[in-house]
Image 1 (cartoon, rainbow, N blue to C red):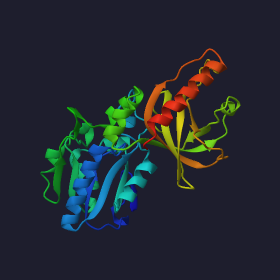
Image 2: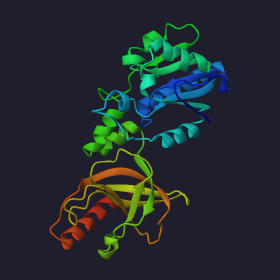
Image 3: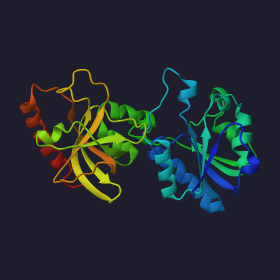
Image 4: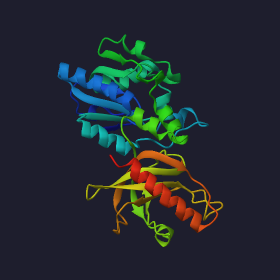
Length: 313
């Protein structure tokens, strides 16, 4: 997959492009709704003999447009999103820097410079896609251009509610992991590296791998989860129980959230290894216990609960 990182203004003559069909959107999470938009683009590209392309943006537009509600954590950080698109067989990915200058373009200026100038012949986007200054451009306006065709993809819903990145983030924040995974279409995952921690877990019989996320992920809410963890270098996957939180039994004012995974039947040193944690089931919120013995007893219960939940994984 060829990746084109474009700023405003960009040098059009430096790009070596064949005609393409493009799916346009931010696509954070690449959830079932996003997959539907991209699948439609792929169908059109195959039918018309065009390169398959995705156009996305970085950072999230809210960083420029909504300072009080800016989104700086992601379900699929850019590098992860690019890897998933490459694995899907996408030919081109246009990553457009979302800056104040870009946000100030009129809808027509955006189309001229980022659709027509890139030799795009087919545009596919969600029904609610907007572009240009103040978001005044929409699917209907795109469809009026004669140099390319536009296909709007309707709402994909679970029940009566639209599948959206916002809903997944809300689900993760309120421990509704089951629903988040349902509309993602896969277990939520976070990539990271195993780093040195406080090593308190091994002193109480539950050694843990302390995971430092590689990117600015939107983490599941503080609590205990049944997870699986892949050691990327080996390709092996192990089941475990994970605590996301601030360890209130040992710290009164710790603010930095940690991710600690206790793997079942595992006794290896994996410091420095790159890993991927997959969240499968929520078990309970994070609690403060009245001493080590109470904590150990609850961890043992959590482990047994996780073993049962992951039995058929």
